[in-house]
Image (cartoon, rainbow, N blue to C red; front, side, top):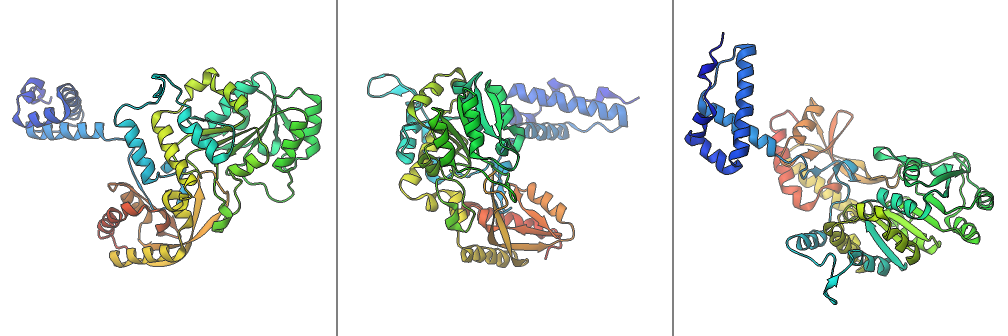
Length: 456
């Protein structure tokens, strides 16, 4: 029977000189919790496996290690060398430096989030991003919530609870995370009226449904990462708006990605823009702040002031409201568009617009620094539920390795982690999605990992 009496007590460990630094770093309550946890594990190891009891110094080392593990953040920066610009799993759009500075200023102290500096009385947080949204889009009003799913849910809840809403069967999509248009409508209390077929929608489908029902809204949903091809047709947005307005029914356009620049100028398929939805006469437009806008996560609603006022006073508006980080960051991001500097200041647009020669030069610099690898032509993707099936030409650094999965695992364990991809048993690294300020640490960590392997 193991002699557990040799296991040091909590009091004895507390008086050990080496533990004083641990208590200083982690505090006494958490250090005590760490000691109890480590001692219990040692006790079980001794009883079940007959393991020797470690010395006090080793126990304290284990305590410190455990405390570090407990307090290591689960959310951390990573280096994106995957070539996916709006990588949903990696937090989508990285922010511009001006946006970061603005957000830091807003949270480093107090702010006038809901304080009117002119009157000295309580104000409304909606004014902070609302003004710049109207300036940028030419609409009557703008309102910001926590994400686009929230924007759609709030809009339907405020304007169509227990009322019919027309949606085409071509647009009853599910996007990442199980977000389904029918489920959101059901949660809002709206009554879904499906029109058209899976692949074809005609204008008379709207005309008939509007004539037969007292419809509250017509919802036009962006296909997001879903694309219809082949025998497929839909009326134009302008035609849908015209028919709906003839029956006095507002049109809500769930635009999804929220492009404010024409993607076609960069060799990509045209992504419907916010400006086009406004020009088509949509009464409300909902879109994301962290996709093609390139800002923080947000759900943006723009359009008719009378409708947005009804949305703002709905009880869900408070539950879904944006905080000072989001409002300040989104305002700074949108300012880039007003100043015609989105392409030069917003990271995702810098990546999309980056010339191939520049990408190739970076890949060649990587190859020379690492002393290994081969340059090949490849493809980058926009991602983030935007521009399905669309890719952009790029240059890749490829590494021949005997165990590519193990290399990717080692890259993910680096500090900061590096995210790459595998193709044909080769590790691929795409300069397009690497932030300039991360390049030095990326190369140092990558070289250290490759030197432990037989990478070529």
